[in-house]
Length: 231
Ligand code: C5P
Image (cartoon, rainbow, N blue to C red; front, side, top):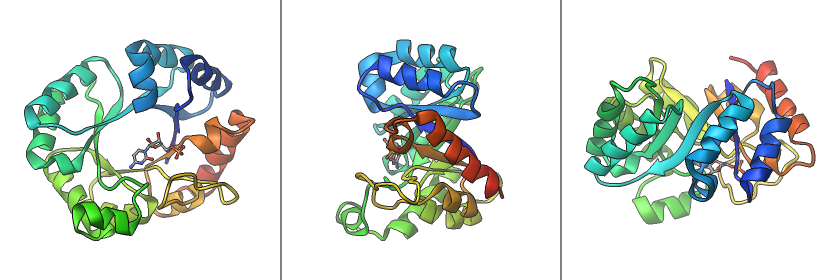
Protein backbone atom coordinates (compact mmCIF):
# COMPACT_ATOMS: atom_id res chain seq x y z
CA UNK A 1 0.00 0.00 0.00
CA UNK A 2 1.23 3.47 -0.93
CA UNK A 3 0.71 6.80 0.84
CA UNK A 4 -0.48 9.80 -1.22
CA UNK A 5 -0.08 13.13 0.53
CA UNK A 6 -2.70 15.69 -0.53
CA UNK A 7 -1.16 19.11 -1.14
CA UNK A 8 -4.19 21.23 -0.23
CA UNK A 9 -2.55 24.23 1.49
CA UNK A 10 -3.33 27.87 0.81
CA UNK A 11 -0.31 28.74 -1.35
CA UNK A 12 2.19 27.05 -3.63
CA UNK A 13 4.98 28.15 -1.29
CA UNK A 14 3.37 26.41 1.69
CA UNK A 15 2.74 23.26 -0.32
CA UNK A 16 6.32 23.21 -1.59
CA UNK A 17 7.61 23.70 1.95
CA UNK A 18 5.73 20.53 2.96
CA UNK A 19 7.06 18.73 -0.12
CA UNK A 20 10.61 19.56 0.87
CA UNK A 21 9.99 18.42 4.47
CA UNK A 22 8.81 15.08 3.08
CA UNK A 23 11.79 14.62 0.78
CA UNK A 24 13.22 11.13 0.56
CA UNK A 25 10.05 9.44 1.89
CA UNK A 26 8.36 6.77 -0.20
CA UNK A 27 5.21 8.73 -1.03
CA UNK A 28 3.08 9.97 -3.90
CA UNK A 29 1.88 13.56 -4.06
CA UNK A 30 -1.76 14.35 -4.71
CA UNK A 31 -2.55 17.66 -6.37
CA UNK A 32 -6.23 18.48 -6.23
CA UNK A 33 -8.61 21.20 -7.25
CA UNK A 34 -7.52 23.94 -4.87
CA UNK A 35 -3.85 23.84 -5.75
CA UNK A 36 -4.37 23.14 -9.43
CA UNK A 37 -6.88 25.94 -9.95
CA UNK A 38 -4.59 28.40 -8.22
CA UNK A 39 -1.14 27.25 -9.29
CA UNK A 40 -1.68 25.11 -12.41
CA UNK A 41 0.87 22.99 -14.24
CA UNK A 42 3.71 25.16 -13.02
CA UNK A 43 3.05 23.86 -9.53
CA UNK A 44 2.69 20.24 -10.70
CA UNK A 45 6.11 20.49 -12.33
CA UNK A 46 7.65 22.23 -9.31
CA UNK A 47 6.32 19.58 -6.90
CA UNK A 48 7.71 16.85 -9.09
CA UNK A 49 11.09 18.57 -9.44
CA UNK A 50 11.33 19.21 -5.71
CA UNK A 51 10.49 15.64 -4.66
CA UNK A 52 10.91 13.22 -7.54
CA UNK A 53 7.64 11.68 -6.26
CA UNK A 54 4.91 10.40 -8.54
CA UNK A 55 1.95 12.71 -9.06
CA UNK A 56 -1.74 11.91 -8.65
CA UNK A 57 -3.76 14.69 -10.28
CA UNK A 58 -7.08 14.64 -8.42
CA UNK A 59 -9.36 16.76 -10.61
CA UNK A 60 -12.34 14.36 -10.63
CA UNK A 61 -13.44 15.13 -14.18
CA UNK A 62 -17.19 15.06 -14.79
CA UNK A 63 -18.45 16.07 -18.23
CA UNK A 64 -19.78 14.74 -21.53
CA UNK A 65 -17.81 11.87 -23.09
CA UNK A 66 -16.09 13.97 -25.77
CA UNK A 67 -14.85 16.54 -23.28
CA UNK A 68 -13.74 13.81 -20.88
CA UNK A 69 -11.75 12.08 -23.62
CA UNK A 70 -10.07 15.30 -24.79
CA UNK A 71 -9.23 16.36 -21.23
CA UNK A 72 -7.90 12.91 -20.33
CA UNK A 73 -5.57 13.09 -23.35
CA UNK A 74 -4.31 16.52 -22.31
CA UNK A 75 -3.59 15.23 -18.79
CA UNK A 76 -1.80 12.11 -20.04
CA UNK A 77 0.34 14.23 -22.35
CA UNK A 78 1.59 16.16 -19.31
CA UNK A 79 3.09 12.99 -17.86
CA UNK A 80 1.29 12.68 -14.51
CA UNK A 81 1.28 9.12 -13.17
CA UNK A 82 -2.37 8.94 -12.04
CA UNK A 83 -5.61 10.94 -12.40
CA UNK A 84 -9.31 10.45 -11.89
CA UNK A 85 -12.78 10.98 -13.32
CA UNK A 86 -16.25 10.50 -11.84
CA UNK A 87 -17.88 7.11 -12.40
CA UNK A 88 -21.26 8.83 -12.29
CA UNK A 89 -20.40 10.58 -15.58
CA UNK A 90 -21.37 7.19 -17.00
CA UNK A 91 -19.88 4.22 -18.77
CA UNK A 92 -19.48 5.89 -22.18
CA UNK A 93 -17.58 8.81 -20.68
CA UNK A 94 -15.29 6.41 -18.80
CA UNK A 95 -14.71 4.28 -21.90
CA UNK A 96 -13.89 7.32 -23.99
CA UNK A 97 -11.45 8.65 -21.38
CA UNK A 98 -9.72 5.27 -21.05
CA UNK A 99 -9.48 4.90 -24.83
CA UNK A 100 -8.10 8.42 -25.19
CA UNK A 101 -5.05 7.65 -23.04
CA UNK A 102 -4.49 4.05 -24.10
CA UNK A 103 -1.78 5.01 -26.56
CA UNK A 104 -0.21 7.85 -24.59
CA UNK A 105 3.47 7.57 -23.80
CA UNK A 106 2.95 8.03 -20.05
CA UNK A 107 -0.03 5.61 -19.71
CA UNK A 108 -1.21 7.08 -16.40
CA UNK A 109 -3.30 5.07 -13.97
CA UNK A 110 -6.94 6.08 -14.48
CA UNK A 111 -9.30 5.83 -11.50
CA UNK A 112 -13.03 6.43 -11.14
CA UNK A 113 -14.47 8.24 -8.14
CA UNK A 114 -17.36 6.20 -6.76
CA UNK A 115 -18.94 7.90 -3.73
CA UNK A 116 -17.14 10.88 -2.21
CA UNK A 117 -15.94 9.99 1.28
CA UNK A 118 -17.59 13.15 2.62
CA UNK A 119 -21.05 11.72 1.82
CA UNK A 120 -23.07 10.37 4.73
CA UNK A 121 -25.47 7.55 3.85
CA UNK A 122 -28.44 9.97 3.93
CA UNK A 123 -26.78 12.62 1.80
CA UNK A 124 -25.70 10.03 -0.74
CA UNK A 125 -29.23 8.59 -0.93
CA UNK A 126 -30.67 12.07 -1.46
CA UNK A 127 -28.55 12.48 -4.61
CA UNK A 128 -28.25 8.96 -6.01
CA UNK A 129 -31.35 7.24 -4.53
CA UNK A 130 -29.16 4.30 -3.63
CA UNK A 131 -27.33 2.73 -0.74
CA UNK A 132 -23.73 3.90 -0.72
CA UNK A 133 -21.87 0.59 -0.50
CA UNK A 134 -23.96 -1.14 -3.16
CA UNK A 135 -23.74 1.88 -5.45
CA UNK A 136 -19.97 2.17 -5.00
CA UNK A 137 -19.62 -1.51 -5.91
CA UNK A 138 -21.78 -1.10 -9.02
CA UNK A 139 -19.82 1.96 -10.11
CA UNK A 140 -16.58 0.05 -9.59
CA UNK A 141 -17.75 -2.80 -11.82
CA UNK A 142 -18.83 -0.28 -14.45
CA UNK A 143 -15.41 1.38 -14.25
CA UNK A 144 -13.65 -1.94 -14.64
CA UNK A 145 -15.88 -2.76 -17.61
CA UNK A 146 -14.96 0.59 -19.15
CA UNK A 147 -11.26 -0.25 -18.94
CA UNK A 148 -10.24 1.85 -15.94
CA UNK A 149 -7.50 0.72 -13.55
CA UNK A 150 -9.40 1.18 -10.30
CA UNK A 151 -11.53 3.40 -8.12
CA UNK A 152 -11.50 6.00 -5.40
CA UNK A 153 -13.69 4.72 -2.56
CA UNK A 154 -13.85 4.69 1.22
CA UNK A 155 -11.92 2.09 3.19
CA UNK A 156 -15.25 0.55 4.12
CA UNK A 157 -16.01 -0.32 0.50
CA UNK A 158 -12.49 -1.34 -0.55
CA UNK A 159 -12.63 -5.02 0.33
CA UNK A 160 -15.97 -5.72 -1.36
CA UNK A 161 -14.95 -3.74 -4.44
CA UNK A 162 -11.65 -5.54 -4.80
CA UNK A 163 -13.34 -8.91 -4.34
CA UNK A 164 -15.99 -8.08 -6.94
CA UNK A 165 -13.64 -6.52 -9.49
CA UNK A 166 -10.63 -8.83 -9.04
CA UNK A 167 -7.40 -8.83 -11.07
CA UNK A 168 -5.27 -5.95 -9.82
CA UNK A 169 -8.14 -3.51 -9.68
CA UNK A 170 -6.91 -0.59 -7.57
CA UNK A 171 -8.70 0.81 -4.51
CA UNK A 172 -7.48 4.27 -3.51
CA UNK A 173 -8.99 5.43 -0.25
CA UNK A 174 -9.23 8.99 1.11
CA UNK A 175 -10.88 9.82 4.44
CA UNK A 176 -7.90 8.48 6.39
CA UNK A 177 -7.39 9.66 9.96
CA UNK A 178 -5.05 8.66 12.76
CA UNK A 179 -6.94 7.04 15.64
CA UNK A 180 -6.49 10.19 17.77
CA UNK A 181 -7.26 12.70 14.98
CA UNK A 182 -10.25 14.87 14.00
CA UNK A 183 -12.57 13.72 11.17
CA UNK A 184 -12.90 17.28 9.74
CA UNK A 185 -15.55 17.21 6.95
CA UNK A 186 -15.01 13.52 6.14
CA UNK A 187 -17.78 11.08 7.06
CA UNK A 188 -16.63 7.57 6.20
CA UNK A 189 -13.19 7.69 7.83
CA UNK A 190 -10.72 4.96 8.81
CA UNK A 191 -7.19 4.68 10.17
CA UNK A 192 -4.18 3.80 7.97
CA UNK A 193 -3.99 0.45 9.79
CA UNK A 194 -7.61 -0.33 8.90
CA UNK A 195 -7.06 0.72 5.28
CA UNK A 196 -4.18 -1.75 5.04
CA UNK A 197 -6.29 -4.49 6.62
CA UNK A 198 -9.13 -3.81 4.15
CA UNK A 199 -6.76 -4.25 1.22
CA UNK A 200 -6.51 -0.64 -0.04
CA UNK A 201 -3.71 -0.06 -2.56
CA UNK A 202 -3.29 3.67 -1.88
CA UNK A 203 -4.35 5.85 1.02
CA UNK A 204 -4.75 9.60 0.68
CA UNK A 205 -3.98 11.81 3.67
CA UNK A 206 -4.20 15.57 3.59
CA UNK A 207 -4.86 17.51 6.76
CA UNK A 208 -3.54 14.86 9.22
CA UNK A 209 -0.14 15.37 7.57
CA UNK A 210 -0.02 18.81 5.96
CA UNK A 211 -1.74 20.60 8.85
CA UNK A 212 0.39 18.87 11.48
CA UNK A 213 3.09 20.91 13.20
CA UNK A 214 5.55 18.27 12.00
CA UNK A 215 4.40 16.90 8.62
CA UNK A 216 7.43 14.65 8.25
CA UNK A 217 6.77 12.84 11.56
CA UNK A 218 3.09 12.52 10.69
CA UNK A 219 3.94 11.02 7.29
CA UNK A 220 6.41 8.61 8.89
CA UNK A 221 3.71 7.59 11.37
CA UNK A 222 1.43 6.73 8.43
CA UNK A 223 4.22 4.90 6.58
CA UNK A 224 4.96 2.82 9.70
CA UNK A 225 1.29 1.93 10.06
CA UNK A 226 1.34 0.77 6.44
CA UNK A 227 4.50 -1.26 6.92
CA UNK A 228 3.22 -2.96 10.07
CA UNK A 229 -0.10 -3.94 8.50
CA UNK A 230 1.10 -4.89 5.02
CA UNK A 231 -1.02 -7.41 3.18
O1 C5P B 1 -7.45 16.45 4.42
P1 C5P B 1 -8.00 15.12 3.96
O2 C5P B 1 -7.15 13.95 4.41
O3 C5P B 1 -9.47 14.96 4.30
O4 C5P B 1 -7.87 15.17 2.39
C1 C5P B 1 -8.46 14.21 1.57
C2 C5P B 1 -8.19 14.58 0.15
O5 C5P B 1 -8.73 13.58 -0.68
C3 C5P B 1 -8.76 15.91 -0.31
O6 C5P B 1 -7.81 16.48 -1.20
C4 C5P B 1 -10.03 15.53 -1.05
O7 C5P B 1 -10.30 16.43 -2.11
C5 C5P B 1 -9.67 14.16 -1.59
N1 C5P B 1 -10.78 13.24 -1.84
C6 C5P B 1 -11.69 12.86 -0.88
N2 C5P B 1 -12.72 11.98 -1.20
C7 C5P B 1 -12.81 11.47 -2.43
C8 C5P B 1 -11.87 11.83 -3.39
C9 C5P B 1 -10.85 12.70 -3.06
O8 C5P B 1 -11.59 13.29 0.25
N3 C5P B 1 -13.76 10.59 -2.70
